[in-house]
Structures are given as C-alpha cells and as structure tokens.
Length: 589
Image (cartoon, rainbow, N blue to C red; front, side, top):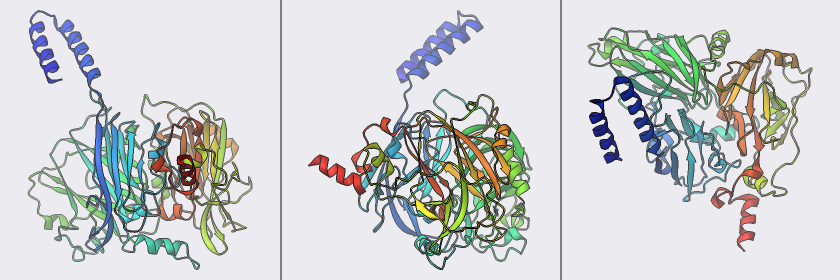
C-alpha cells in the first residue's frame, strides 16, 4: 500500500508539469477515489476481563465493576464498517454478565446485542464469550452491562465510531472532548435490587454523586453557592476533570449519559453549544446555553473557545426531573497555559442548573432536535400502531411498572433461541395488547392498581412499518408522573412528535414526517406521550425499555421479534441455557 501511494505521488508530480489545473484536479480525484476503494475496513481484537475492584470515584471507596482493571471501561475507537471482536471473560466470582453495545444495530449478529435472556445467556463465572459485530454507522455510542443492574455498578464505557476512511463529517472541528456522564450510589446494587423487590417496597433514593468520566465530588456544595470549604478539590482521585483546550478553536464535545436514574443538564460557563448529532445521527444544528440529556442518550455539540486566553471555566452537570438531592458534578474547561489559579476559579460560581421541574425548558430543548438535511424520511404511514400505557402498579403488594397492565418478566431461555428453534413452553405465549382503554385518565392514579406479569413479546411482521406511542401517566401516588427515556435495540427510529395528556387517534395528523429526527432513545415527559416510527427490517429479537435501571428491573419494558426465521445459525454458547441447552445436548447426542 505504501509503494502504491509513493507511485501515485511520483506520478502526480510528473504529470502536473504537463497538465492544466482542471485536468490535474480531475486526475488526482480519480486517483484518490481508486486509493480509497482499496482501503479495507479493519478488524479490532479486544481481550477484556470483567471483575470487581475497589475504587473511589467520588473519594468514597466501594466495590465497582471494572474491565481490565479500569473504571470506566476502556474507550473503543473504530471507523464505520470496522469489525469488532471482543473476547469477554467473566471473572466475577458468583454472577453472570453480558455487555450491550448501545446504538450498534447488530445487523446480521442479533446474538451479539448483549441483552441477557433476550439475545443471549448470561456469561457464567470463569467463562468467556466472543462478541463479534460490525460498527455499522459513525456516531457517539457507549457500551454497558445489561444483566440485573450491573450498569449502576460501573460496567460501562465509551464506543466512538468515526466516519469511514476518505469520508468527512458534515461539520468541521479542531479537536474532540469526551464526556461520559453517570450517577453514583454508595449502596451496592444487590441491596438496591432486593429493596425494589421487597414488601414493603424500599426505593433506592437519589444518587450520592454525579460523575464526569468516572470522577465526582461527594458532598460538594460549591455549585449550590454554600461555600468552597466543603469541596475536596485537592485529592486528585476525585478532583474535577480538567479539559485542556487551545484558544480560538472549535471542539466537538461527545456527551453520553449512562445514568442509572438521573436525568441531567449540562452547561459550560461562558460558552454556547451547537448541537450537531443525536444518538449517532446528524441533527439540524441549533445553539443553546445548556442542554438536557437523559439516560441512554448521546450527543455531539460544538463549542468555540473564544473567551479570554488566561481563564478557566466551570462545566456543571445537575439533576433534572427529580428533586435535586444530589450535588452537581463539576469539571473544568481550561485554556492552555492560562494564568488563573485554582483558588481564583473556586471563587467563581458554576453555571446553575435550571429548576428540576421546569419541564418547559426541557421540552424546548427536545423539540428543537430535528433531522439534518439528507437524513432519510420516515415512511408516510405505518402498517401497525402499538399504544403502550406506562403505569405503576402492584402485584400482591409488590410495586411494579407495567405496559398495558403487564409487567415484563424475562424467561430462563433467551427469546432469540426459543423463537429461532420453535421451542415450546420456553416463555409465556400470551400475546400482549396493542392498545389500552380510550378513557383511561392519565392524570390520576390507576383506579385498579393491580397488574400481572408476562413476557410482553410483540411479534412484528418483517419489513413492516410500526408506530409506537409510549403514553405516560400518573404513578400510584397522587400528582406524580416521572420522566422515562425509552431505548430501542437493533434500530434507529424516527421521533414523530410529543403530546400532552392522553394520545388520541386524531394526533396522528400532527406527526412530523418531513424532518423527524432519527434516534435510538426518546424521552417521555410527565403526563404526556411520545410517538416513534421504525421499519422492522433487522431480523432478531430486540428489547424496547425504559433506560432507568430500577424501572427496567421493576418490569418497564417489552420485547420485539421480527424476521427471526431469517436469523442464521446462532453460536451455541450464546444460547446454552434453559430449554435451548437441552436442545443442544439432545442434538449433540
């Protein structure tokens, strides 16, 4: 390849003496095109080991889940079209593990989606599973545990996919800054899970800290104007992350939220942000002073370092949608070689997070996100409409979350295996409903709070177009309706619109089918609804669920199966549990 490039350079040097400028330009274009076509996608081989270790992300030591001794886990860098081969060894002493590649569609590899008991069996202790998949599209993504509440234990990291060699982004920038946002509990996830499944119910409460790239400041009140003496800024283990920048440059901020519970707001002192990407899809650029981000979402924002060169600026991340009992996380945007001391910065006030319940502010941001020019438009109409009523309910006194009055419980056999091989009795075969009562009062607690459990498996006709309405409602307590960010595996979808109160069929006429943004995660606001549309063109079994860890644990999710008969042979170690394990043993025998 090097000799080929040298020949091109030599040839262009000789030809340029005799060619006109226009002819030479065309000649070089043809050569570059030919060279880029020879360049092949790469295969990345990663050897990972998941284990526990002690760490102090916010200066309070506790057990965390780490990959190769790192928290957060290693950052993956790839280009669109590259193949990832991740050999994952489970070194947790007593529990299984899986990893979901959030935003990667897993086209042709649904068993690599990393959803326990949906796409694969949990990887047993001391065993190894190989994830092999293609990074199908450039964008800002991440990976995380998808078994129990392991994401809340620290099992996550960044997955950055750049454009293919020879291609360009739609926007220009001089450098990148990655911001992985998360919330952090001092209580272990097992105590949390037992409490959520107990009678009486024990809620997990609010997180003790917020983290930026795995670093936070527990019990720091600087951002709440209560003085600097309570903030431990000298302990390097939990001192604010410092992002060094050069003046008069444009930086791409890749911002990802992997929170367990919290909705967040991010602001940078004296710097505006221009949003250009959402969940791996180009957005029509718009500029804001601050931005909301919900669990499972990712964005790219451009900032220009146009402030005085001898200054530092606070980056502040605070809680939205819940009463803020967690102090904001802090980081520093530092102009290189500036003369401002840390003490001088501590005397300044970080940006203030908008009021937690200022939903007008939140909606204003979400409504501005539209597809960039050139983004595929959604089909004009859908073949099927599924309406999901999202309610809080009880089963024998235990509190659950339900969709159309069914709380999701996963079987012991992964759906992908049981459906692909038509295994009988592997899961509850009762079909969930596509709708709920038209007269349901979403503004009041449910009249009948009781619910049941089920598989919540929707079988979707392959290549059909599906609309899903996620309808929010009042919880069990009066005047309580929460934010729910919903994530769809295996697809991007178009966000057709949002609405207040109860969805009506007449609202379909308001759907945006001209520049609807493509996303993989969409927020449902309190007492409102969100409409999405997708094409069921990816054979497999895909989770669709609230991305808040305790809510999913309590049943807030459904499963979509499409074209499963088209799935090629599934690796045996992906489905070697439950009834598929028996099938494999019988076939081997």
